[in-house]
Image (tube, rainbow, N blue to C red; front, side):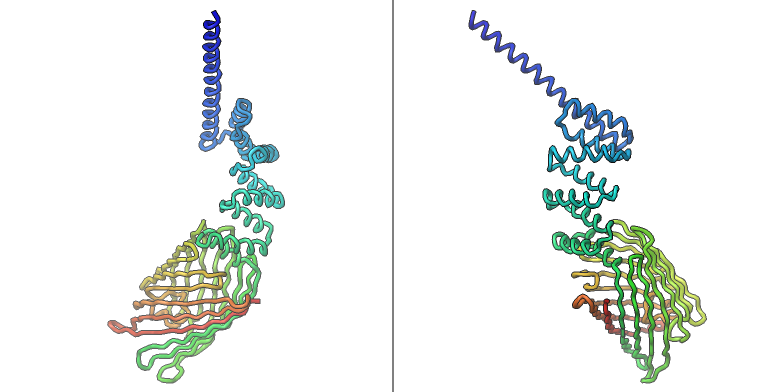
Length: 417
């Protein structure tokens, strides 16, 4: 009888084991299915109260299943019950310090509630655990930016730029930061244009400007002087007065304004310009108009442009829609260290109303064809001195089947206070 009794016990053990194993598997299947239902509903229906009930049920069925706790936090967050959301995010992190999503949600919650000190503590912990996660580093930058802590923001941006040298999002943040830092600059510019046609040129253009940079944008005042020669005699000279401004109108938008006046024929009598810029991710788009009163002509243009950061490169294409001939300009800039350190290369067709050197002849040139190329370099020295050099070659039509070659050399110097 003993062998039979032993066999009976073994069979009973396997039956019970199979039963409990099946029950546990069924429970896991049920909880997984419930989890998927909640996630799908959050994507489609947004029935947060129902999802909270489901998550509480899932937590009851599987207390150690942290995904239900995270979903509870997320749904409470979405219905603005911040204390409950914070409790569940912290619970998940306490039970599993490597739960990545819990850190992201908790940091965002602290930022929304302006609890920047708490957010910084959490983000530093997250960076320590996930040193390769760029999102946590970007959140840290956001914390500095929201507190107007430009010093730490600039310092940390420099650190992560070294880690992600080709990242366009970080490059955009750097440019945006330097564009909003308070600074004042005074500068001078001079260019000399040589023309290969007998009796034409050289042309001289010089300017002095003052740039006041504030968090709301910038204001620029400029006085320019031009003198054009023919057969070693000055034939046109004069002064232009100009005011420019960039004004930030939102987190992703800003506007450009320009107004200039001159009583002398070497410049347009009146020049007005406006452009609206919109930024998203590493892209920028702009739309604007230009008005130039030159001689007896009133010239207008619509300008449309788009640009993008690709690593340390800034690429931009802009077109000017004008009555006679359109103008097209492709610009590229490669940033080296700061926004003042860069190499630039520009190619274009046609004459644009933004070309300062030829503005006095816009009425004639806009009806003619031209091809131009510009190369330039700008460098910041000792944190205060900015020196720029440029060279432009322009193949310009001046009459039917007749062209001239123009070479322009430019030099600029700015002192940054």
